[in-house]
Amino acid sequence: MGFIGWIILGLVVGAIVKAVMPGKVGGGWITSLVLGLVGGVVGGWIGSLLFNSGRMEFWNLGSWVLAIIGGLVVAGIWGAITGRKSNA
Image (cartoon, rainbow, N blue to C red):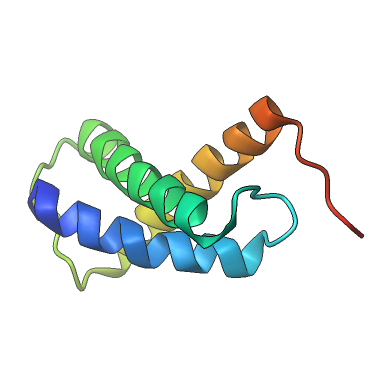
């Protein structure tokens, strides 16, 4: 999957991250989508390094798992940097 595929996947992951971590991701939907985009690209990059494969498919479950993990990690780092606290 190319860079454009990871961007599209990252935008979807951003929406998933916003649903999973609503109080911990500050900045609203736009920030969540951007963090998901960055997380998707980072997850794809780390996955290609770990699994020594640059060709991951868009409809592959492994690609989605890597992108979601990357999105959650990036959103967690963003929350730690901005000091955003949960409302719960």
